View 1 (cartoon, helix red, strand yellow):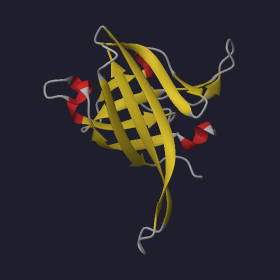
View 2: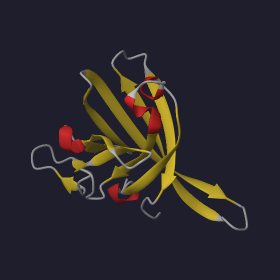
View 3: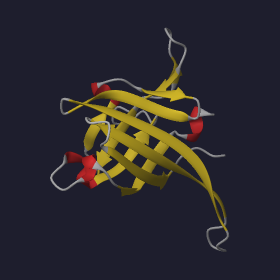
View 4: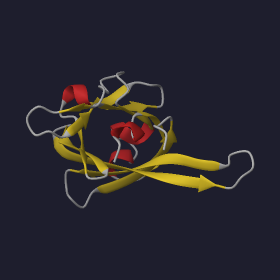
Length: 141
């Protein structure tokens, strides 16, 4: 998998799960930046110790404010064909897994392939799983 395919700003189109329930910080989740160099989303690199491809990220609310970024914890790691992150959020363990897929459309005005990301979060209790999907300015296939 090419890390460059994940790099960009992805608008979150839908989200479910414990982090998006009313009253929680992530209820207004607007986008995720991956490897852009902005908002703590540092550019991809090969780590010196475990030789994994790593990159920074930032979860942004609908007004562009940073909810969570890799400045405050570990970076995303490319593991197989997914980006993975494990750290703390508001004192509880949070896991983020992000996959990328190509969506093909036949519409005359929007024909062709479009990259989409699909995320899964596990927060605190392992049964508290949320899913989300996004589209945006990701790398080219």
